[in-house]
Image (cartoon, rainbow, N blue to C red; front, side, top):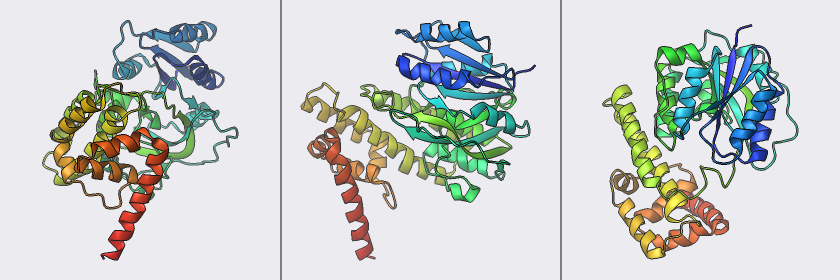
Length: 372
């Protein structure tokens, strides 16, 4: 029987309990039409051994070692090349798939679609205990204009009006794990993840994928459980954040030049959303992160260099915070005024930072309403 769905799990130094939960959430539902690729990016812990253990016990599981550590993009691209299935699902090795993932995917993966977006749920330590079976009887087919709008949202990080397309808040198309992709579509369009990029690879890949997609559908069912680990890559201290961000901006600029040349609306959204998000993350994950070991004087110097360097300087100076999230408005407002000490205190004391930020957002909106 031919393989219909390939699940490619990216593995690199995953905590063993998380990795086992991830793998077991998949293997118990594998069928003759499905396969699991455990792709190990040369883990230095026992992750590879755990993967080999499961692969040896199940002929529907394949263990692949990358040979040398090359990052998530190379793992994702290897998934595209190695997959035997008509459809590909990109998973992360510390997350969990729905108990009904394969049964549901097999029911809806129709070759007339290029991409099928689905819902996800965030969890922290334990996956929610109850999980309802999928009651959806038909996919929601998105109009032809949707691909461009989703592409721009992936590029610029400007939220999409999901109601316009019948999608709810749990549809997270920015991430590679937010959808199923028809492998022939990926191959025909030579779609690849940007090799060497260490952050937000999915945003580059999906900017092109949704731009190229001719037929997109939406499945309003939680297919994926995303683990928000405060020690994970998206939360931990990153001393190379500025360099990684500049590399990402280079890839995004290529997207704009190839797909949206001369489009002032896209340029504005990119500046007012994506660059602002990167600036805030630079503060949270680098300059003011509690694990940053540098003395305050060194961190202040790096912070001031950052906010005075393009393209971040213009993005911060020109930021339009109307209807924006407090998590951006507060740090950017303080960064514009070069308030290093205030930011340092607030961000390093997260229990204070959140209520202060939310109060600031409420006061700002009230002040704006009074002046109308």
